[in-house]
Amino acid sequence: MVYEKYESSDFEKLIEVGKQSYTVLKEVGSHIKPGVRLVDIAKEVEAQLKEKNLTCSFPVNISANDNAAHYTPSFNDPRVFSDGDVVKLDIGGRSADYLSDLAITVDLSGEHGKLVEASEKALENAISIVKAGRKVSEIGKEINSTYAKYGINPIKNLGGHGIAKGELHAEPFIPNFDNDDDTELEEGDFIAIETFATEGEGYVIEGDYVQIFSMVREGQLRDAEHRKIMDFISKNYSTYPFAMRWLTEEFGSEFKVKSALNEMASKGMIDAYPVLVERSKGIVAQTEKSMIVERDSCTVTTE
Ligand code: CO
Image 1: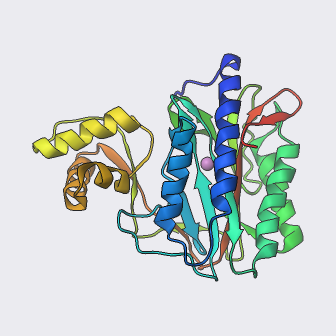
Image 2: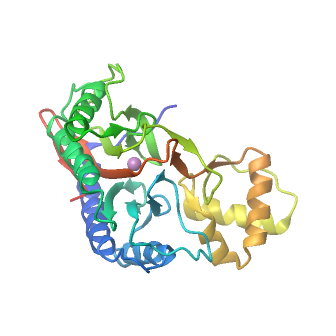
Image 3: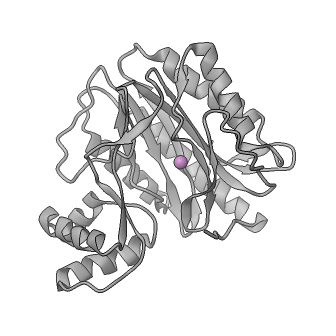
C-alpha cells in the first residue's frame, strides 16, 4: 500500500492539531469519574474538538479493563464508569488530512497504578530514543524492558504506527517488544507510539461488540436510504473510521443504519473494527502520543 506522506510544510499544522487535541484529552480525561456515562465523555470530546474546528480522525475509544481498544459508545449506550474501572481514553483530532492520535489511561480503581505508570514510563523512554535510522524493533525493545522493571507484559499484537495523509494506520508498525523488524524510521516520518501494558498474557482477540467502521470503497446499493447513508459516510468521513452512533444521530434510526452497514459489509465496501479484548482477561493500560521523526530526536505534536 502506498501512502502520501506528510512534508515539512505540513509540520506546523500537525503540531497545531496535536496541541489542540492534547488540550481536549487532558480536559475531558479529568471528567472520567464513577457514575459518568461513557457516551457523555465521547460527546464531550467531539464537542470540544469542534470548538477548535476539528473533527475526529476516528471515533473516541473508551475501552475499560480487559478491553484494550475499539470500544466506542453506541447511540443509547447505558454504560457508566464504575469505581473499579481502568479506562483508556484514545482520541484523534482532524483538520482536513492533518491528524493526531493520542491516549491516556485513567485508573478509577486506585489499584493499578503500577500498570499505568509502566505504560506511561515506557512511552517516555521510547520517545527518548526516537530518531531517524532507529529500528522499530529497538523501540519495541525499549518499551518491553521498561515493562519488565514493573513485572508487566506488553501486548504483542497491538502497537504504534505511521500516520499518512488519509491513512491513520500506515506503515511502519511499531511494536511493544523486540519483534526483530529492522525497518528504520526516517527523518520526516509522522508516527504514533502507543504503549499497551497488561497484567495478562499480552495478546488481544476480537470481541463481539462492533461500533466502528471505515469505508473501503463506494459501490451499488439497491435501497435509496442505504445510498443516502453511503453518500453521507463518503462525504463526511471519506476513508477515516466512523462510529455507528454518528450515523444514528444523523439518520434517526439505528435499525436503518445497521441495515445499510450490513449491505455495505456484504459487498466488501466497509471494514469493521470489533472491540479488542485481552485474551486472558488481563487489565490493560495504554498511553499514546504522535510525533515527527527528526534526524537526532523527534517533535511530539500532542502535548
Ligand atoms: Co494510534
